[in-house]
Length: 102
Image 1: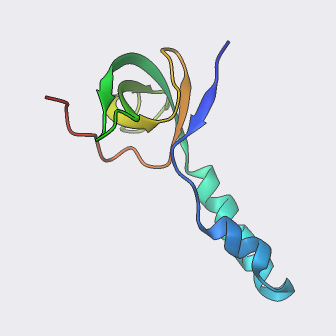
Image 2 (image 1 turned 45 degrees about the horizontal axis):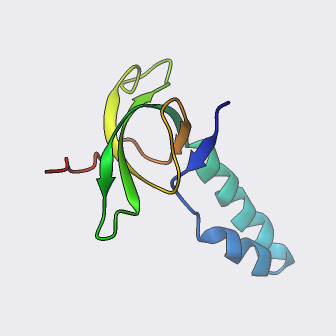
Image 3 (image 1 turned 120 degrees about the horizontal axis):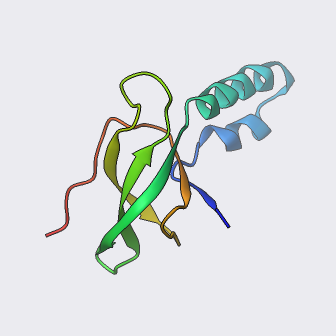
């Protein structure tokens, strides 16, 4: 059983539903383009809980890109919400890494 978690909530989704007919087409196009940029990653190890109240989990993620510079890379990310090993994450950006826990 594999679950997929999304780390990025696009604030333009609310604008897309409130926009008028002419503008809504343009806004919806932008939302679709942002969703296409998400890269998949698989949690390979849970490093621990972090955050002021322990509500964030720090995990090591292996990127599942087939080509480019992200192919086979592993990065450390913070995940809010429930997660387990072998879960899939949709990452909107893969440039930044989380700071390591002490």
